[in-house]
Image (cartoon, rainbow, N blue to C red; front, side, top):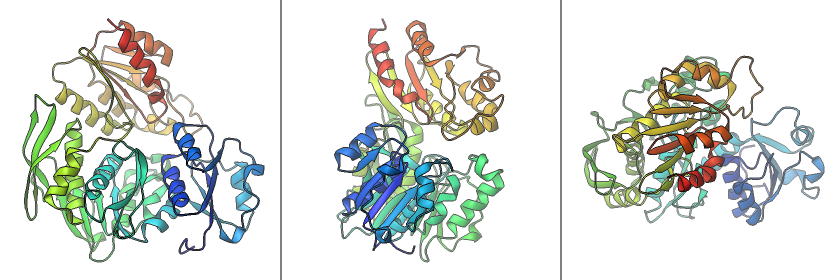
Length: 461
């Protein structure tokens, strides 16, 4: 399938996923009939139902619309679905186009000038920042985001007719990003991850090198300083970015405004300095993300004033340094961090922002394979906390692996203030422990404890 012009009906298998839901909304807003299946109801599926998208939660082929013409119908599926899924099997046997989400995203994004944010960490935050800046320009942009932007209240920005740009996360999982042919691309990091897919880090690097070879002629690539990748694999013009090291895009005069609790800085670019930038969103790692976002927005033609405005009113993404509660004594922050390097960056930012304050953190490991592959690194990152809590891991798409659980991380930690408990026991711990800041971390369902944690803090004396 070379394009989507003839498609009138789109069915999604796994419609509740953050990437799938953005595509579902896109097709709905562009006039197609949209329906789909997901395993469980969520606020996202509820929002789609209110928008007129038919969503059901039983794996039942009778729920698939029977009046759609197969010749104008497309089915989109996520690799997270098991092979024995009844609806997926049904589509495989029918004369209906059946494509992975990543392929469809590529078909949509490649119709315009793409801006792709790649890397094993920081994609969602940085792509949302880029979209927020470009949204200040007269032509705007479209965007497929990996989280719910607090500025826009959605994971999808529909491009105006005259918008040249569409921003998307270039996800390395399952080599999804190889379906994108962007005009501008950025790489935040290339760390070992998804070893269940790649097997070894050198295979991950190979995949990133294939991705950068697909940047369009005359395009540009921005790489974080220190990330090693073979530049000969692309014909794009290459730039570097860094928080504070010598690079094409970097900060100058970076300091924390102690009264307002925000960072102020200038951004050095290849064509001069963008002065007096301000980030009201917390965390030093988000200043680094901001530099990357500025580089892409700058190369896309945003003015210094538009860049300043887009940074200053950036409100963040749900589950990224997400402040749920704050009073005179306690602060509660939730974050999606689920890789050792992400935990390290998040906890380092907390310690920088809240110097001298006691931090207790609860972590829910995500995937048996990732827990197995990085247990020692997870232990090292969690040792940075004053008190660490581990709860049972979230399996997501995986079957159990013998001997793998949160306990293997716990056993390698050197921190004496550590606990391995259930979710209910964790709430009881929070009532008794002494701390100033509480954080929850992980890509599973630990965020669903947020309301209970807030209520615990409200009653804690």
